[in-house]
Length: 178
Image 1 (cartoon, rainbow, N blue to C red):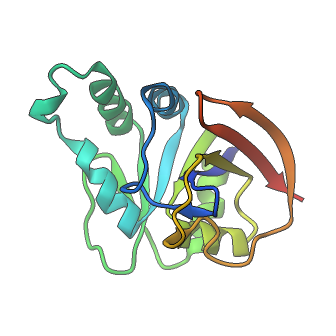
Image 2 (image 1 turned 45 degrees about the vertical axis):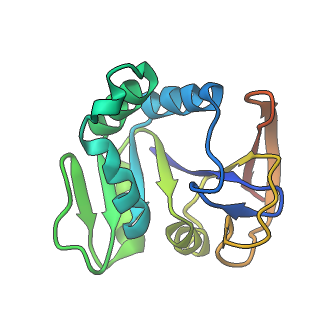
């Protein structure tokens, strides 16, 4: 049975913004290892469109082993995309139909391993349905003051499972629903 894990980089004041701050080389290598070990990724439309960047090699990757490694890991894993507007998706990706709860419950029953959940609005919907098994916050020492909050809706009751330092400045907090 699959486990759904929602994990994102977050500022100290609770916002996610891939343009305002990004991973250090150490954290990026951590994300490569995570992607290599995942059974797949579940995306909302916006996050999927951002991540489509990894569908193709880019000339600037020639001397960047980490970007090439992440791109290869991302392309290998299946991706499920929740969208009401997309009619097609890229390679190794599948559209999730209108019955979100039924589709995700079936996915969890059919797949073994960890499935990454990406996108705050999708995570909100899955949280409301009680389908997320773990929340991973990669806490960065940055204050944004505005933006997209990690929790798009009310924060569910959570229980701290573990915490660890990933690099010099980032702590990973792992929570399970309480």
